[in-house]
Image (cartoon, rainbow, N blue to C red; front, side, top):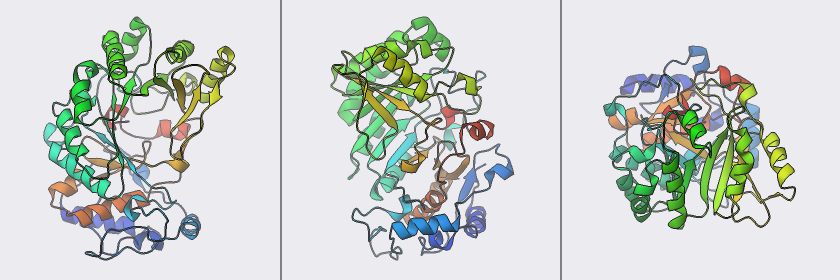
Length: 415
């Protein structure tokens, strides 16, 4: 559970700092912050233990990526001075990964009940007073952007049910250095809101759609609304978004028979259909037998389109992208389970209740909300963020171990 008050946070930070290698501690020359660590409630104490990479691993990284010690307060930005492309040390982990992409959950609420995201019985929502306010969201975003984040994605729950979502995007657009504002949505409210969202500064859209069969769609999301989602996709295309990304979680026995239908959508429309491997989270009844691997999906699609060609990927891309020659759009695969991409991960997450998660599948969290509300200044927040990023593991624990770990349901993380 989140801890309140300076003394408790200071004690936790000191206790955990003792376990950090010398090189990590040298990144924080101003001393220990007075507020620090919290973990997701319900996590067994043994699982809360921070498993750090070996000192030898960290030394190897340090040898490959020269890093100078941070300047003292008042001496300017804290940068990796010897790197040709300077980047904040606070957002660079011990393996040299630079975290320039921040995902912020705006709400825990959703107007759908997707099987892979929310337990059938629902979830216990955080009291409104404990969720981040608009001011707190923008304040944290500003801090991360100042340190090098250039892309922010708004998630949920369903972010478009938050009444002030347009205002939040407009405020984010004012942040100097922020290049991209994206949103992941179920599309239910998209057709109505998108003109305002675009005017406010929204650059990219990901829309969740797990079936092209209305009855099956309703079974998966436990609600009606298929036609609203399709209207949202059409509106995004109409307003010039290209590509419009469509996220499809593939589950055996449910929708893997629609792979070819989804690919066919890209023939005439500027879509990037992204097939996502089914991932384990609390309450979604994950089973290995339900997961359809990237390779199996790819083989099935290539049977229909043997000429399917792979496209070049960026260094931090999560999707392996392909294109059927002559098609307007493309398809991608998010291979988190069968072929993880942890080595190039550049993402951090802030939950709706203000906790920083450095890994989607990790169960250790840091409450930035509590630090903000107890009066932490910018430098103290940066120390806390930097310490959390510095403890990020080389890779996630693997699908079978993840399925046994205590973590939030997806809806309480924000994807």
